[in-house]
Image 1 (cartoon, helix red, strand yellow):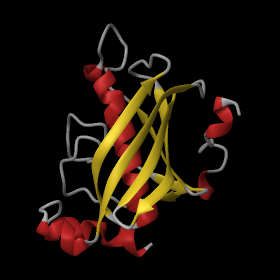
Image 2 (cartoon, one colour):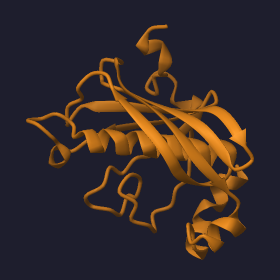
Image 3 (cartoon, one colour):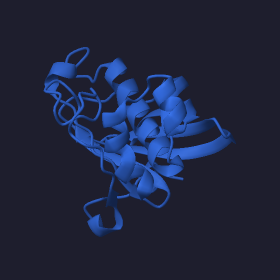
Image 4 (cartoon, one colour):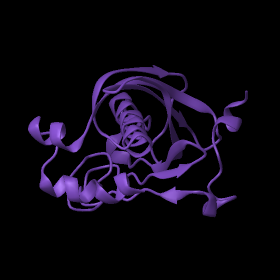
Length: 175
């Protein structure tokens, strides 16, 4: 399968995608619109996958204009996290993730991230895959992660979420 076949083109059929609500009253580096230094990722659902389109700002570069590897890993962790949250309707914590850096990415380039549930390992754990493509639809990074899954009661007890977060995620879980 070609890399371009692994992603969908939002511009061709935007009505196919459901925007995932995420709130704006938090400061997550990956997804908060309120974090002035963050990625401000938005997420969309279509065909049993979660997508995000973003352009990484220059201040997050590594060598020259290359995207810093840690930022690449953050994008993949974020897309995999939101995939687990939205598709499995659970609060999550990353237990383990691996990243394969396939081709260099540059800042200022439109990227496409895609997340898919690979396997539900148990009631409390899932394997998620994340893919990151450049503006030429080439697969540039791939990640596999294991995510711990929690209901609201356990997530509150572990201090993963507070009441504000539970209210923020309510529309996501009721979809």
